[in-house]
Length: 309
Ligand code: AMP
Ligand code: ZN
Ligand code: FE
Ligand code: FE
Image (cartoon, rainbow, N blue to C red; front, side, top):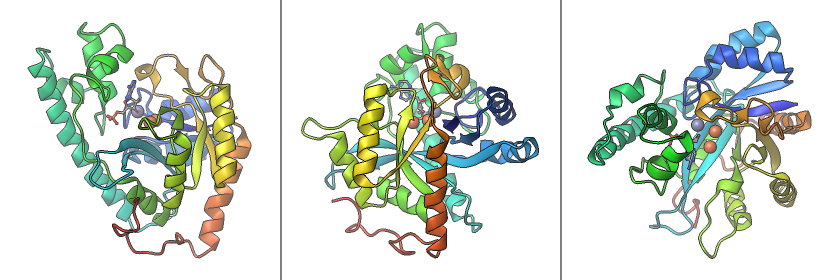
């Protein structure tokens, strides 16, 4: 069993990278990926420990991207996972992450102001104090919970922080096509995260959205996830086969910031991500490297025309 989707306290989880490695070993996981939002800080800290302990640790990242079906529309948020993004030493992917982190900080300033407008006693400083290198919405949720404004983390999202919440503010999200391209160029494999959470328009289906993602180079789909039931797994496995995508999977463990989701076994202990998933993902990455290490689309950024229609 493996877990290819976890968050450390370098993004919005509560376990330190050291604790994650320890917990993975205690559980007997065959491999672990730390896939923090917009940062490799957790992976970087865990890598030497995992090496010493003999744990197969996979470099991962989770990016919030925007998919527009038509230019000029607002589009939808798509969480994109990138695996093996550490293949290229030139650092351009990491410096791009710096830009995403800046837009996140700007969003946080506006979100704190919006909450205060709603009469909530909250400062950005107290939210930031809960994180290490990065502040996310689960940190806001924690403060709202601690101060008694909401009874659970989930209600903090439902009422305030989620996309339909009273205090939701947008941040600049890269286009899905650009993010896929950058992951691929950095030697990685891009996979769409928790597809059950994709919000399709009234006339759209998840299947057709995933088809559009494939057109811009998507290589994997998260079949196994804490939010997915057995029907979801079958549906997305079938979709993976149809589009030739590598199935991926993980718990999306966030420690105390997502109560009820356990490392490895997910919600209600019902998750089991088979090791073959990692073998196939590795195969894909290795094949690409042997094909010159370059994405099929070449080394230039996707032009507007090459992006989604
Ligand atoms: P951020 O990257 O700061 O925008 O926060 C994103 C994280 O917030 C996700 O990884 C989830 O853990 C959590 N999250 C986002 N939307 C919801 C929601 N509607 N309900 C519960 N958690 C959510
Ligand atoms: Zn998160
Ligand atoms: Fe996500
Ligand atoms: Fe996640």
